[in-house]
Amino acid sequence: DAKTTQPTSMDCAEGRAANLPCNHSTISGNEYVYWYRQIHSQGPQYIIHGLKNNETNEMASLIITEDRKSSTLILPHATLRDTAVYYCIVRVAVDSSYKLIFGSGTRLLVRP
Amino acid sequence: GAVVSQHPSWVICKSGTSVKIECRSLDFQATTMFWYRQFPKQSLMLMATSNEGSKATYEQGVEKDKFLINHASLTLSTLTVTSAHPEDSSFYICSAGLAVGWDTQYFGPGTRLTVL
Image (cartoon, each protein chain N blue to C red):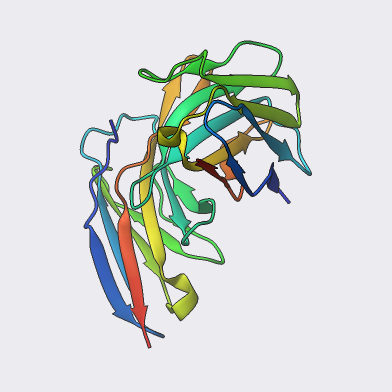
């Protein structure tokens, strides 16, 4: 089962910041938080990941709370092309490898 | 970098036939590849983890004789849906992790399978 819970849907205005929350209260100390997004009928696209510290790249910022029980993905200036389903995932270690268990995700609609 | 391709992008087949889907990492080597299935309006469901040169590890409830996985090289994994039935119609997606110090899975574009 997925270790994350997210709101089913959100919307924001084009050009504004989109803040997508995620709860992962059972996360273990060495488990990473990953964010992917999926545009209709395409494969998921990697956005960002983090362990403890806040992270930023050209696509987004990831804010992780100090207790690591929740995080927020921030798209600083949302565009219409950011409309997608956003998945927050806790990467689970299995033997010598890892698994990504997808939850239901948040459907983000960016309004003109 | 880190591009994953799938072939074919879509396929229609008759019930009872077998269908092979290829997943390739184009610009990196992947010791581990993953296969997912996604039904309409649902999330991705992990089917199996495929390691180069060894047998795949299937998730609970996934029939290994139904979904044959072969990972013969560091850049290619194949999923064969044997004796396909209409309920196997779905969007099949693969992902790959870098062989060295991998920390991210990169996903292919997906293959839409329709079984008539």
